[in-house]
Image (cartoon, rainbow, N blue to C red; front, side):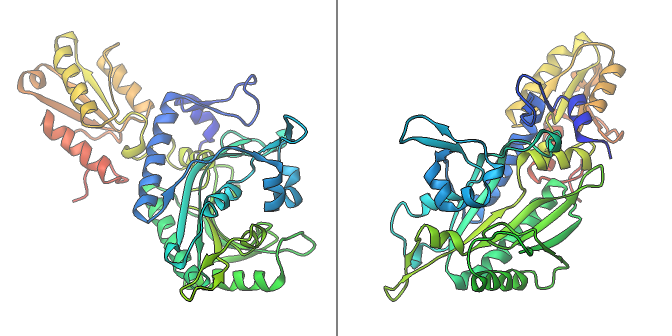
Length: 405
């Protein structure tokens, strides 16, 4: 594997600049295009699974994070508070869950509302020390694919099972190859929120959700508020990290006095499930860049198709084909600078999945010759047929370069 930092620079995906600050990468147009495609996919996957998306601010009053427990258990990882006045002290949030709790309690809830699945791709901030920062894998400004499910106790098992199914679906589409599954538990001598009975119940529920799944137990790796299932991946240097996670939390519903009205009119306490299908966009792309060596599946490749006229006499036909590709929703570019051989090599170095060559015969017959990233070439196709072929692969979010079957 090649380190994602090197490949990120070579492919123009992201850069770091001392003036921006360590741990604060700048996403370039190519990296942003790939990231947006993945973000749109994840939001669509969540919508189809019954999630409601929200937008919440990356700042919050100090009192919010004192009540959530983050200031008591997580202060060393938070940026210093910003005091605007004697009564206004704000912090950059280290997690999205406190804001999602406020979304839940914005109105009264009944058993008919549950499970309530609240999702957001939101920003959070960690005061990481300079020595542990590295490319996209460890940053200070994090864009997290986060969600919180508020449900009845008897709904937890089904929700955990569905989350694990969604994680598998997302991993298959993205080309993620997990290295293992970890059940992260409390460790001796650590500070944790909640009581022993809550923790025992949460651990039992997660073990039940992992029935039939191979996993290892990891004492000391739990969140301060509850145990979690961690889906692990390994980077180019052999370092293991968590990509996807499912966490059970009995603590925050107590802290914020959350409730819903049960079917018999009795006030009940919901359970809070924290989950991330693909983790943060930064850590996800650190992994994806390395595992694919920059050759992303066509559906989230920064440029999906480059159009190459052999010489200036085919400029009109090539320009029209590129425009038709963009109108069809593809990320297409036209390259006319330099020899055809050099342009083909440039497209290969940039890991573009498809190069459409337009020569005199193609221009005269309304066809293009498709060259695939892996070196294969297809016989000349009518332009509309070539776009249909590429469009089918992209729409299917397939890992290969040709339609299945």
